[in-house]
Image (cartoon, rainbow, N blue to C red; front, side):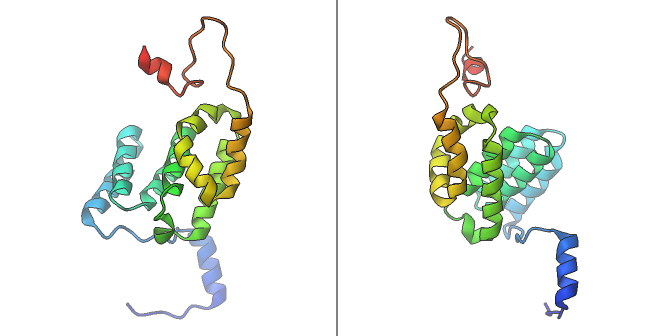
Amino acid sequence: PKAVAVSPKASASASKQDRGLPVLPPSDPKVMQLITEGKKRFSKDRKQGADLLRLAARNGYLPAYMLLGQMAAEALDEELVIEALCALLSQEDAPKQLLPELLEQCAMQLAITLGDPKFEATVRKHSAELAKIKELYPIVGGAVRVHEAQPPPRRAAGARPSREADGGAAAEAA
């Protein structure tokens, strides 16, 4: 392809309007199919769409986790946002596929989301990934430490744990 010279002013306004992510599409047609299908199905069947995007990421296309996180954020599914960002940021190869600035923004979003006390169970659920992420992105460490400093929620004697308090384990065990 031919390179086209663009004035700095034109490129600055284009980047403000575009706001597209500097992410290359997958080169593998099978992975591209997973991405396409995952995006299509997400709005109708979030679980199936998310599974297809996770599969694309596990097949080596890590930006699929970021796409999953964006779609989850648009759907106001904070738990899925946390899962997707943890999966992305804990991958050692992520900087090979995504710009460092983009990964830093993802880490900042994860830290902000994890700052909410209602995600204490989610922090425990993703503790192994978060341990790795804290080393790579120290900003996330502050949000995780907030949860670590808080004592676990207390229950009345004989009460069953709520779904939120135990990450859903009580409901699954029943």
